[in-house]
Length: 322
Ligand code: PAP
Image (cartoon, rainbow, N blue to C red; front, side, top):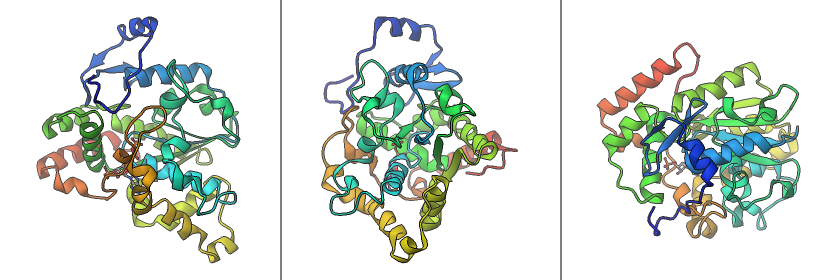
């Protein structure tokens, strides 16, 4: 990894490197290979954090998770969840979202909190804890999945074509790679993206949202764009903090939507410059266009048709359409 790369790649222990050598390995979007663990593909440092969180994370009933496969709207949903849960405490001009990137306010289990190199201490997070993960449902720490725990999961999915475009731009920018469209397209179609296969990740949470609707709320980026107020109200109800009639009357829903909008967040000084606290990724890399359908500017009709066909086959019979 070149020293100019904005992602600070941590050192892994010898024991973990030996463990990695026992796992199936493939080339992914980045220079670092992907490793297959419990049916999903991980980059080494995130796998180390994921396994460490499986071993050590203690869930609390009041925990709220933002979950997703990368580039599906995580930054936006983190901001919305943070704004909703903290809306009685925080108001502009001192709102934490105006001076912190959403990723620094809502840390990832496997990237920020667990693993040998992680700097943040989960014990310091006030309750209710708002946390995040890209881990697939079936690999979440057991206590999050246990029927005895009441923690809640917000999951956001996005149509695979826009996700691919977003992913490719992100890797090109953050990892400074010269990724060809044809190569990234082929990798996604083969399920070889970080935390992929993309469709299995989405299906895992989709099924849980049907079986345990009070535990997992399934959202789509496109729905959030098309009817933001209705989706934000759905999130608030799911989290047990619905908007009161007075709040609606006072414009609180719109205030949160405005604060978390692409335009406002991407225009903040704190998001235009600097790097995330733990991973060191440029904060501005999380804001590109924030639109639905940008894939039309990048993918050929044949590519689009092929991804649609693969994903429709994989999701067939699930009742989910992306
Ligand atoms: P992550 O999984 O690495 O955290 P994530 O936030 O899911 O990334 O994806 C970034 C995408 O969300 C970008 O999409 P694009 O490449 O198609 O533009 C980014 O622009 C978009 N995004 C970030 N913030 C917002 C927001 N507030 N509203 C809508 N889209 C947003």
